[in-house]
Amino acid sequence: DQQVKQNSPSLSVQEGRISILNCDYTNSMFDYFLWYKKYPAEGPTFLISISSIKDKNEDGRFTVFLNKSAKHLSLHIVPSQPGDSAVYFCAASARAGTYKYIFGTGTRLKVLA
Amino acid sequence: DGGITQSPKYLFRKEGQNVTLSCEQNLNHDAMYWYRQDPGQGLRLIYYSQIVNDFQKGDIAEGYSVSREKKESFPLTVTSAQKNPTAFYLCASSITGQLNTEAFFGQGTRLTVV
Image 1: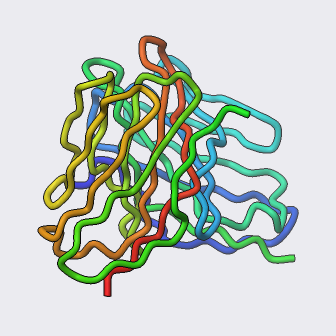
Image 2: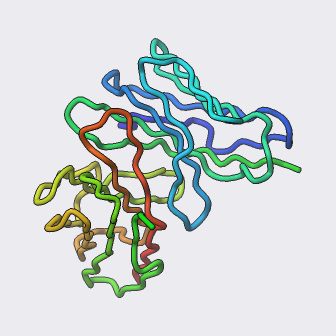
C-alpha cells in the first residue's frame, strides 16, 4: 500500500513558467514533509520541507504548500529553469515512534529552454 | 568535510553470491537508512537503524541483512535470497531527537547481478 503517492510520473514546463509538482499521502500520522531533487546515478538532495503546523513554506524560487484536510502537498517552482530538470521525490515522516522517511514514486520534471 | 559515503559506486556480482554495500557517515547522526530505487517505484525502505546495535525492517527487507555495530557505519548485505537484487541502492542518515530534520543521502551504489 503506497502511503505517499505522486500520480504524475512526468511533467514538462517551459523555462520561466511555473512548475507544480503534486503529492498525496494517506497516513494521517505524517507530520513532516520533504521534497528532494535527484539527478540520474546520484543520491537525492534535500530541497525544502514543511511541518504539519504550517500550510506554506518558501525558499527562494521554491514553495511548498500543505493541505492537511486533503492530505495533499505541492511544490511550486517559479520561475522554472532548465537546471531544475530532475526527478522530484516527496517524502513524509511521522515523528511519533520512528524517524523513518516514506518516499513517493517521483515526478520527472523537464524544463524546456 | 562531513558527509555520507557509499562505496563502491558500481558493483557487479554473479547470481547466487552475497554482496555487501558499504555506507559510512561522519555527521554524527544516530539514524541510518537503506533505500532501493527501481524505475517507476521511487525509493523503497529496506532497513533502518535509529541507534547503534538496533535496526528495524523496512518495507522490503526480505533477502537483505544489515548490522549497526558502529554509529558511523551501516553496511547492507544483499543475499542470494533476494530475488531481484539489481537496483540502485541509497544510504541515508539523519539526526534523531530533534523535530523536523531531513535525511542526507549518499551518492548511491548501482548493483548489477549477472
